[in-house]
Length: 303
Image 1: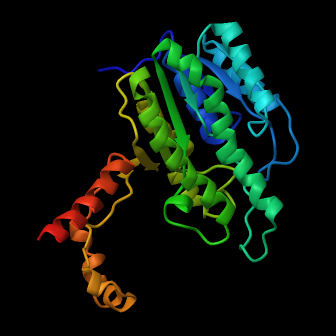
Image 2 (image 1 turned 90 degrees about the vertical axis):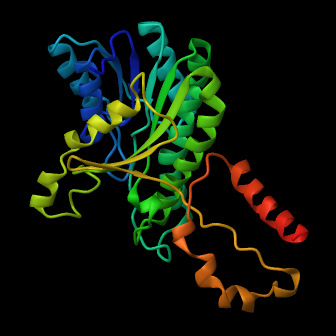
């Protein structure tokens, strides 16, 4: 089976370099028309230029592909709306959105001011919200859409000095969970990539041999799978250096305590039982977890 994107239109944010550039080039090579978005900012989000996005467009066109550039700052919904309007005017539809744009303002939480915290959330979280909101009704009307969020191990597991980045990245998993439920009837599938790749955001953190092993192009096949016509939905795919795995939020089985046992001391005494990961499972939606707790409580009262 060959995965192709002929007749599809993709918007890729942060596509002037690194992961986004590889995503855009790979989509175009497989037939997609691509809107190459890049604000052209520095690693910390300052500055701005459309030259990087235009250079990627020229790469795509040089190989016979179709692409346009747009320098929207994803943190500004008005600019994002203009980008999507231009995509519709040029190509007539939007089938794929890859929310890849991001910045870093790393500091320990004690030293981080609230403006630095909010700026990172505005780009990673609200930028993804803005872009998704701008294409959502288009995809609903088409009865087709594929959206890929970009999370990080810093959000899934934590990383010192990245409270702002980690908070934004984990929030995107929650956004995916809800949009999966709201989009399923309209054939909109929403997934998340958790990339490990050598980019401007990681080049100062890793040695040269590690950076060579985790080149961005070794992540992109996972992204193309997540936005293909037969893609799953509500999947967090970790990817790096050509290796792939699936991450999920898991929860141990409820351990019921009778009213006479409901004390913090009992929880402390039985915590190993409560935290027994051999009983862990994932839930398909919030209601499934809530119902399991209700059932546990009701069964205990009856028995």
